[in-house]
Length: 590
Image 1: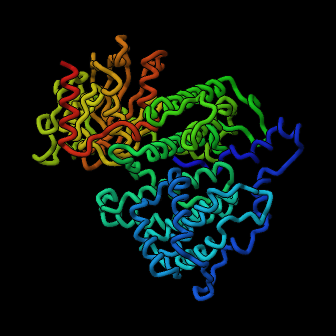
Image 2: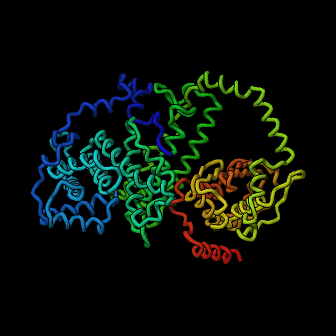
């Protein structure tokens, strides 16, 4: 989920509030973007490309360069781990032996050295001539700019170099140039996942996928950090991220990669807050000149603060889910850089969550069109036929097609479904395949996930309940495997299928016991299973009939439904790992 273009969390938006205006006077909402646009740019940082023959390279030797490489991997790489030192070392040694040339290998080495120099320099941002390492950076930038115009996704060194160049600008506090370079890096790295998708090959199946995965996530985070403060065009990297797995952290996990993974998961959660709370195109945001409580009805205010409270809980759940190896002590007055980043990530939203007001209602033209569609005679006739079919339990056309799909359709036995006795309301008649789907979903709600159960789901399917939306295998699988990790035992008290249409619908009553706390909690809900044309589940919607209760149960459920869960819940990669997890669960239940 990306930050909406129309969000209202920039410093300029704050200046538009009545309270700020009364204190500071009237300023344009894009004040800081205007200031950055008018800042003079030293010629050494110019984004104007030069012919390769006119690029002048600095003096270079291993003796002077090696300490800068160490600086980079000790001070820069832990927060931006897009380069593996084992992969970088052969490139560096080649440049040392052959000398600097107008190619991507030399430019990557030079920008690494420039960052190594900038990382240890004492900032002097009032001095426009403070440009540590610029003699190394300028020729690297010129090579990268030329390559960006001429090459199209063939060499990962290009987007890596562009991203590191963006980082260099960020060290100089140049947000517009940082945005321009990360935008270029992002559109360059997107060639890789797009190419694999066109070949119907998962990126994860290739040997070199980790550098690509890491760079995609890094570009996403840096672009989001800039977008949170400046209204600038996006590169589209968020669309790639939606279908990309989290980067691996090693086995055993490397602490710096765990810190970075925590940073990634926090950024996604903050984007969700941006999307839900601060999109000026939604009903939850205030007018640019408005203040808290202005023009807010009681119903709007209640709904808004309910959402704000839930998002606040999820911020807390994110922190609680951090592995012990990286969870910082919030009372530590002298945290490390990595700990400080983890501590500061959610901090900007802590005071802001309660301070939002709704925006204007839907445009009258849109309401008029919606009304015309809703009152059209054919619309009414279609709705009545749907209601008759659902009331009588008549399967939809999709369900009928699925029922006659052939003898190789999945069965209770082939999937290993435990809930085979499907209770149906009088007049409802499920097909055999629908019964398998319902039984498999009941197994999931009872804390018995397996990869075979999830093979009945589309890879891009969605699980949704009152407080989360998990789209894509990595996300919905983590939800189901996380359930037995938090609750034991889980028992289905009753279920009744009320519709054999599409979606299939059933009523569910479940009891949960939080691990370590012997108090049972019952939840009632209406579950809908939406099925695609291929017979696979495309969506499961769990609608709770009651509010989320307070106490240990609610805290555990919120942990499960936090958007950070896929980063920390173990989902088996193969049948062998799946069998081990299943055996462990069955042993605990004995």
